[in-house]
Length: 193
Image (cartoon, rainbow, N blue to C red):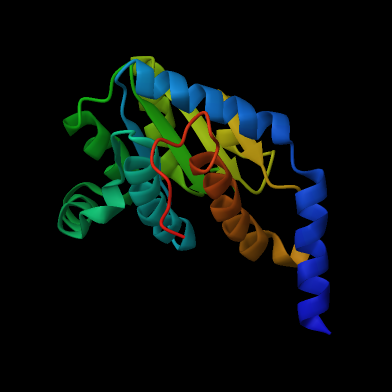
């Protein structure tokens, strides 16, 4: 049965994920908040939906000034139309005055790949962050992508089922960020339920 197999793989991920990286990411986010830095969350496709949801949680529950370019569809589409998809996030971050107090949080299945021309928009944003001294964090589904190779703290969702890398990676982006926003060292406001 599909459901049993899917949830068994999710359980495998829960037992294999590097929780020390999740805790390190929590520590980095506490430091970000303490220095008054901003968190910019980037994602495309399902990861874009996750980014939008996570902005709410980091702002409301953790008191971190957090934004995502995907929440302004007018600017995102204008930049895509006029400048191209590859630079859409870097252009947005330039106007946002991304600086060394800030951090990116990348939500991606693959994490970007220059040679395969995949998620170049995230790669350009990561490069801009590195140029400006901003931290780069990630929750990704592959350890071979640009984010995992260049990021400061990147949680890689263990690959337990090759056919389900995308759904499991995107699902565990939510599991990891909810772990973060409920971590007592990071959470400032309790949820209602």
